[in-house]
Length: 377
Image 1 (cartoon, rainbow, N blue to C red):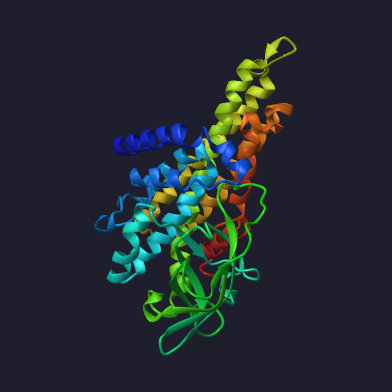
Image 2: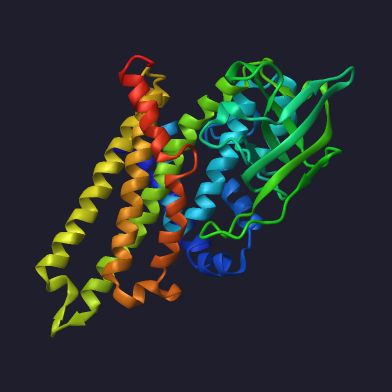
């Protein structure tokens, strides 16, 4: 059950989604427009640094507060909600692991979204097997030299700040370190914007390092601790994406209920056919089950519970699977109209499909869960 403060937060965020995201989402999707000006309006509400400490301009909210925010935002546009999640994830890594100089240098402008942030872990040959990444960082007298390619990076080319995972040591997770890389770094370039099924309102590009020169103080956290830093950030990223799935699914269900009461077949509204009523009942049940479990996982992360990583993986798997299933069922219940962009459901289906893949595929979520219950085996 949400607290009174969380209900007020939900209402304010829902109003923003209804007024600033939903009316423009289809156009942004059709034109592949990344609405940076709207992101900065979201930041004025404190959404650029949701769980960032207040001394650098953050809102210092809880992870449970954050899932309330992302669920509501996604009713307006899952794509924009998901990018704001990624931005917050990258910023939180700097807040948690950065030096005081790094925090003061980067976080104030990230919290206002004057500057945007991207998270660079995945590579062309290292997705689910993240510890196999090959981007290298070689120490020099002046700092570091990066070489390699990062794949599927949201915000790439527009973001000013990139949190990059690179190999500084031996193969495996212990040889990985984290770095803060600025957009104007010599040797940094970007691939073309990917043509995607969904998430078209945010750019997705390769980030390419060719003898990219970094100062010594670009290292984030301790050398060799980057993989642990990356994985700790993913717990929060997973529940945020789960919340965005449920927000999109809620919007799809609401539109289906409206359509079912207006559309008639065989002289009766769709909502009068028992078979369709049962299907909508199942959609609502799946939505509420996932939302209830998501709040539990977020609470565990706030409490730093020892089973938080497992619960976040479970919540990500359940919420993204249920969210896509609900959206896909909503399209089906709209019949041919669901396939038309003007009804808004097909975009939700396209946007939510990738949530079962990113922040660790749902197959990898099962690996995480099984490892937890089998004592690390």
